[in-house]
Image (cartoon, each protein chain N blue to C red):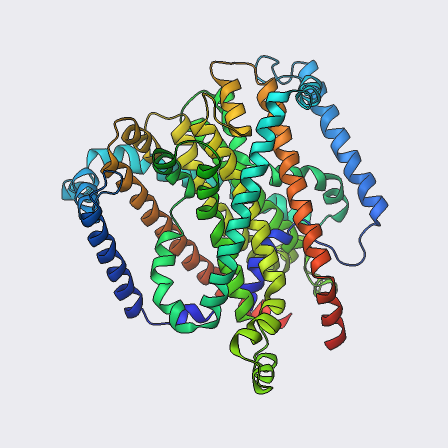
Length: 264
Length: 282
């Protein structure tokens, strides 16, 4: 896409200008709800990133809250992928089974997943298990449904050709079906990634004893606006980095499949 | 192009059509069978003790409670509040997101200038703003609508830009060569051509809006806030019985499904000419 070819320099200039405006506005407005960005950055540094070098400069507060949050996101997405990808490929190759399951799948996808958090709170009690269950339940559907869609879209001529060449079932899966399903699966991952952050924060807000969401709710209860803004900025940075990580992985994985796609 | 179509495929997932599939009647019959088998299996698992009844209530009691909720005035009021916030939030999202998307899509200079800010605002999970914005606005419709606009605008914005990028440059230039102004060209060529992309963006935005709607109610409304989220929060404080929570969840799922079908129907109706025209030219 055209966006990616633009140079980096103007982006940073605009970002710095934006932050400068924000700084000027907050120091003029002096609202207790809108702390100055310089104060937010200073707070973030002292709270999370001023630790010893041996801990990668992370403080105890950072390892006690940021790492558990990230761990839950990664664990949730890993489990959702481990369920959604193989199941999606299997269902994508079986139109009949998918027809039986379709209404249930559509219902699960349409379900606003935050309503499941209270259910998981009762089932698992408060804590990491409940949070990971919420993330898995919310992120598995985009991955599953997109993989089904992708695996169902394999060119029948290619499949017949593969059969004619006496490729085994597993060879067909590895060389035809998985490559055909991956681009769509990645579209599902993108959606699941942003959902996983939403669900992580939500689950930690409603029932946790550590994590970024827990720090947010503490900040609100003690009316510490600088801390609340710090957690919001931190989540923005983490979201940005995770998106970049996924985009990089996608380029790496799909670049190797591009010949397949272009031949279609 | 591949990366652009993959944006649209997310919402189209599940509706994987194509030839050689069973007929409409066949698909409905199979789908209905699937639902009935699922309900019977979960009911049997509960009755046989495979799923402990103290952990999960019986399917039949959840379904009965779901039916009963339809007669509860308090629940219906909360359901109405949820739909209202969804509609107001989504309407503002579209009214703001589509024009900005068209602007960013048609004027490369503006796009470069705002890109960094957009890219750093977008990843902030919208639920992270619930606490801050609720301190500023207090619970209610304004809070839910504000958060919905923040969270739901990104799919609309990105899909509009992708749609404008996808406009046939020959059609656009031809139109310009006939002496139409830039704005007229946007209105008569770019927007209609981008409409299917925008429609997909709005459907993605709708599901984000519903999630935020309910999350906001759940976090800010345990005492007397409006919405299904608030209803669930009120019912689940201190309760170990999941029946009413699950029944409300079933309603939330039905609501999500109905709103999505509604938007799909509107999109199909509005874009009927679109497919016909594509059929002619290709």
